[in-house]
Length: 351
Figure 1 (cartoon, rainbow, N blue to C red):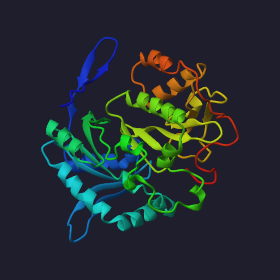
Figure 2 (cartoon, rainbow, N blue to C red):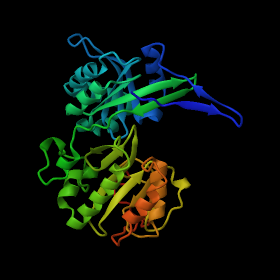
Figure 3 (cartoon, one colour):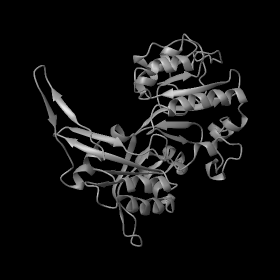
């Protein structure tokens, strides 16, 4: 059980803000739906979505996340209600009614977004005042993308969202082995605009041992920043998130082999360095985030990437600077980030 405390302080006093749950479930649902993209990185699609006469259910909220993955959200104001089983029922229904969901996305977001749905990353978010250790254990045993999110209201204008678990159905280690499961491969022919792009599984399969080692070191460093970090391999990149993506990575093998990364932060807050980092706000690219960077061993560049990682939510403690500096202390490859072309999505394709 979480025991997060929030205080309001001044020069002479401090007072604790009492946390509370929503008076009714609908209040919580309306709050989340009104700012779903800000809170969760999910685009809102529908509320109280009916599953038809046969299943006789209502999905609290449906959305599409920043990676194009369908998202089911179920709410409970307390912790004693079986939100997980209910959510699993709706998750199975959704995966069995893909055409219905695709039509919903087309109606709300357009055909282009509907064509890019990542079914392998379909998620269930359970939001409740608290969860028991039995809930967390049960989710850990289920090979599904289920995230437990604890909420608490403070006063009339403060909301706390805490990711309780970090479970992803696709084992990242499995994806990085040469024998990639068919469920994680691209199952349909890509659009003409993506024919030149390798899937993430192909990137891993064709990368040199040196590039794979570079990727594994970068990946391990990111995952070491917290046990609540969720790693999700997608068609063209791997995303790392807590509640929302904070960094995405792709392996680029041609020309100057490197790890292409996009971070979720404002490029104007970072001093860009030629050959290392670049503002891609108005340039088409794969992955979420508007700051592009390459994985580099250059001592002159490591402070910039550390700063970006801290602002994007990767690094939690100031002492990580020493760890990071040591991590980048040896020589390695660089990528000409300031060149006219950016590896990733063609500029003609909207982000």
